[in-house]
Amino acid sequence: MSIQEYKLVNQESFELTDIFECGQCFRWNKEEDGSYTGVIKDAVINVQKCNKEIIFKGKSKSNLEELIKDYFDLETNYIKLKEKLSNIDNDLKISTEFGSGIRILKQDLWECIISFIISANNNIPRIKKIIEKLSLTYGNKIEWNGKNYYTFPTVEQLSKATVQNLREMGLGFRDIRVYNTTRMILEKQVDINKIKEMNDSNMMRDELLKLDGVGPKVADCILLFALKRFDVFPIDVWVRRVMNDLYIHNEDETKINKKELTKFAENKFLGMAGIAQQYLFYYRRSGNFEQTEKNA
Image (tube, rainbow, N blue to C red; front, side, top):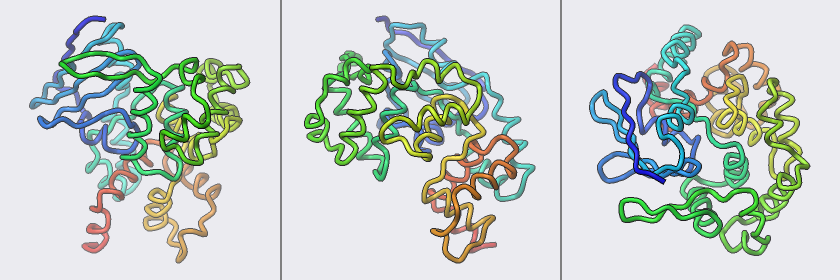
C-alpha cells in the first residue's frame, strides 16, 4: 500500500455535503475541518474541497486517480443532466439547484447489497454503526494518519459470521437475511459478476430480488448506487411524500400505488428517474421543501 494524492480543479457538480449526506452511502464521516474520510474497497481516502480545488489523499493498493474517477463517476456530465431535469418543471429546477453538488457514486456491488439490506427500516447513524462493526470484525485493517480503518469484508470473510454473530452486532431481523444472502452469493446461486454484465435494469432487478432481504426498493437502490442504472426509481417514505405533494395530490399518500408511481416517474423524468429521485429526496428531507411550499 502507498500514500497517494490526487487533485481536481474546477470540477463542476461536486460538493462534499451533497454527495455524502444525501443517503446513498454509509462509510464516509465528516472531520472537524469539513473534509470527509471514507473507505473505498482497499483504500482509505480523505476528501477536502478548498475553493475550486478538490484534494484526495489516502492510502491505497490500487491507483488512487483511477479509483477516484470510477467511484465518483467523473466521466458523467452532471451539468447536462441538471439542465435536462431543470427543463422538466420548476420543482425539479429548485431541487437540482439545492443539491447541485450531488454525484451518484459507483459503489462496490457486494458492499452495496449488504449495506442496503441493513438499511431496511433503519436510520443512517445506526446503519453506519452496524457496517463499521462488520468491517472491524471481519475486514482488513488499514493504518493511516495514526488511526485504524477497516475494509468492508469480502463475501468469504463475511461468510464466517454466524446468525448469532450478526445478531450481536445489532442487525435485528436483518441478521438471517444477511447470513442467507452471503451464502447465496458465495455459492453462486446469484452471480453478482453476471449481474454487472447485464444491460437491462429489469433483468438485473430480477436477479437481485432472488437475494434474501432484497425487495423492490432495496433492489432499485442497489441498481442506482452500484450499477449506475439511472432509469430506476427507488421509493421510500420521503420519495412517496414529495411525489405526492408535487404531482399526485392524493389525500392519503400511504394509498399511492408504487407501480403507478414508478410508471409516472419513468414517463416524467425521461430516463433519469433515479437522479431526479435523489435531488427530490435530498431537498425534501432537508426541510427546505416545506418552507418553499408555505411561500408558494
